[in-house]
Image 1 (cartoon, rainbow, N blue to C red):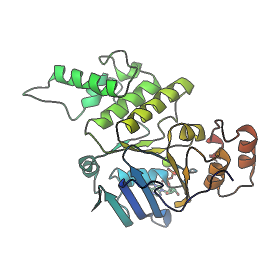
Image 2 (cartoon, rainbow, N blue to C red):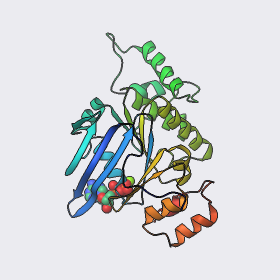
Image 3 (spheres, helix red, strand yellow):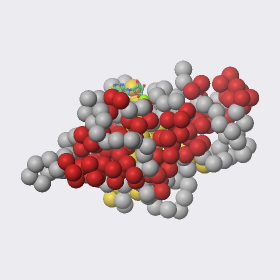
Image 4 (tube, rainbow, N blue to C red):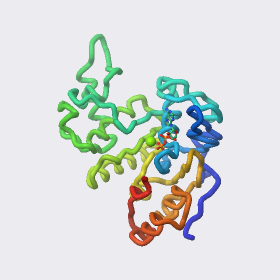
Length: 278
Ligand SMILES: Nc1ncnc2c1ncn2[C@@H]1O[C@H](COP(=O)(O)OP(=O)(O)O)[C@@H](O)[C@H]1O
Ligand SMILES: [Mg+2]
């Protein structure tokens, strides 16, 4: 086998900026997460993959302060922390771009970037906000022609760009992206994966939830597989095969999806994980 999963949530000697250990969360009788570990370091992209119901969204909500875990520890920059609210996540330096992006269609790019956190001298400082908007978009090498158009007229990739740029405003250490390419075509997916590269280059720790094995292989350093709310292996993204990932996701090597993935996607080329969804 080209690569084997490790039990260790961190593959590198670098100290993790964010560390989860033994995270547990139940909703009534449903155990959404059981004993989950996850590490991300500065300048590292960790993909979290798993089938529907694996616990990915629950994990995102714990990181963003929407849900409190029932058990386990969260360590951020060597301090044990609790993320009691979205404001607490923001203050710590953990930014989340949710799948629905939460943009206002009728507002322009600047207004969306600064919604709720407008720069004020005595009144809204239009010039400063426009300058800062261009700065943020340039940081991401974003392809947005003007910041004065309503978000409604932007492509899916450009919207994702605006949502990611907005998440950078609080200068976060860790950025959590929930399925950033799920709704995008090929060209726009490439655009968004380039943004993720920029985030890594700038030293952010990135946690990217994804269903798409090709995206994961293209941009992630490591892959954490969740299955039925538990860790099911950590992989080196450069060497793991799509087959092995799908096997870890589905919990079986010998099933139709895994066999088909092997046939259609040798480990060196891309393949889609979409088939892993029920
Ligand atoms: N608010 C909730 N109330 C009850 N059950 C939930 C809630 N959120 C998630 N779950 C359950 O927790 C499990 C994990 O769900 P989720 O985190 O959404 O998985 P994923 O995002 O990987 O598809 C599922 O069984 C789901 O039905
Ligand atoms: Mg989900």
